[in-house]
Amino acid sequence: EYGQLLVLGATVGQGQLGDLVNVLGLRTSAAIARYAYYMLGYFIPDIRDLSENESLAYDWLINAHQGEVTLMFASIPVTATSVRLAELCHERGIPLVVITDREDTPVLEYATYQLILPHTESTRATSLPFYMVLEALINEIGTRLAPLSVQKMNEINRYIISEGIIRNQ
Image (cartoon, one colour):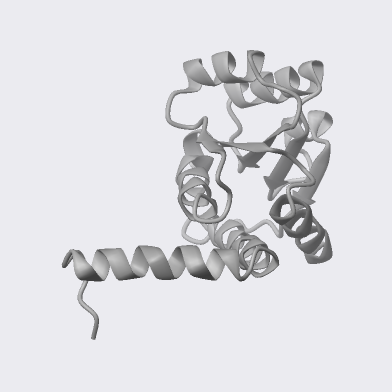
C-alpha cells in the first residue's frame, strides 16, 4: 500500500530506520536505484550507491554497522547477485527495504519491509510505478525534513545559478 510508503518516508526522514542508507538495484532496476541515490542524497546525508559496482556491494554489506539500512529496487528479472545481497542483509541483521512490482520476487523472503507495486506487462512502462512511488517517498522525506531540506535545495540552486550552470529565467 502507498500508506506503507509514507510510513517508510517518515521513518527514513526522521532517521529512525537507519543512519546510513545503502541503495541497490541491479540490471533492470539499476536506473531506478541511481535516481533514488541521486534524489535522496539531497535529504539524507549518509547514502551509498551499491548499484555501481556489485562486487563491492558485498564488501560494503559485510562491513555494515548497526544503524545501516538497505533500500533495494527489484524489478523482474532479479539477478542472483540481488538475491545473495538480500540474503546477506538478512544474515547480518541489516534492515532491508524492498520495493518491487512482483509478489513472487525472490528477495522478498529477506525483506524487513516491503512495498509491492502494481505490475504491468508493458515493456515501455515497467519502471513508471517505481518512479511514481520514489517521487512520493522523496517528497515525504523532504517534507519531514523541512525547513532544513528547503534550505539545502535553495543553497544548491543559488550556487548553480551563480556559477552559470543553469540560467534563472
